[in-house]
Length: 206
View 1 (spheres, rainbow, N blue to C red):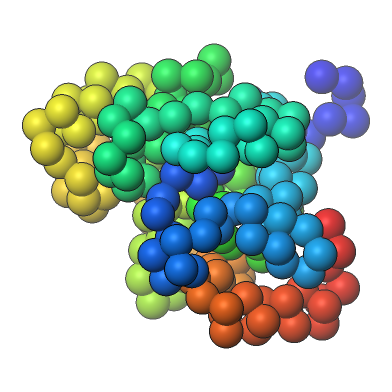
View 2 (cartoon, helix red, strand yellow):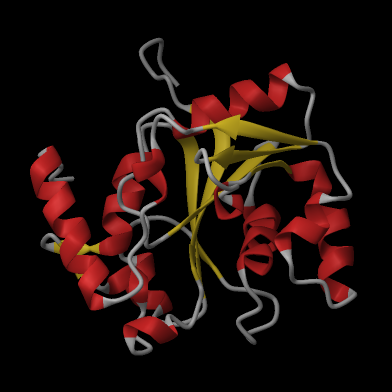
């Protein structure tokens, strides 16, 4: 890493392992958005912020590998949700911090990772999660990799709810009320058209 490199020692796990039932079962990360697969927007936003990226996917593995980053599957292929994707990413990570972001949120800001990391350190927390001014956005969590055993124990006991796992650890809620667009996601064709218009208006072509 050179002197101009501002990437943080974090592994970002892009969550692309869901069923995407509201998109007709299409693999959301590969759905075209403003001329590029949706996941390409997320990778482009996070690559300058973190040292390493991993894609968590349970289908179309070869296509995801074509983006140039490692692809990891859930241990259980039953589509068990974001925590299973986080666990897969933790197993692949070599950094002490692991962050997650879903593949269907293309409006990520350039300071997402640093704001989460700063809050984690400032509050001596184990997990940092953004708050958009109305609610927590837990699928954008930053987690200490040392929590891997705790997470895998929770999953093996049948736990799936993110907030229930959070209850076992020190949590920092990070104010992102100034950037609620960060968490705009694409779940159906109407939302895709709306987000494409927002990207065009913002001049975002990544």
